[in-house]
Length: 80
Image (cartoon, rainbow, N blue to C red; front, top):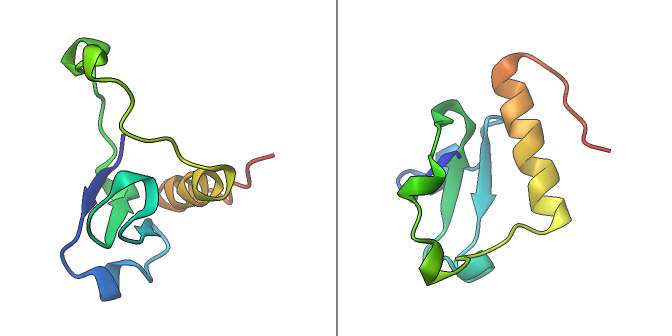
């Protein structure tokens, strides 16, 4: 899981290790970025599975996130 923030959107959205989301996409209410440098583990037991899915990335955004994570690892990741 990558943490997201709306702080400094204009600057962070241009960084190769961040991925921009616009308000209205995937249920988000503000423009924000996923920060690949803040990857963390989230245990299934920490999730409220009864609340249901919050959102699902489309193929384009998933590819962008994989590239951002690859950038943090020093890898040229290109999902197939």
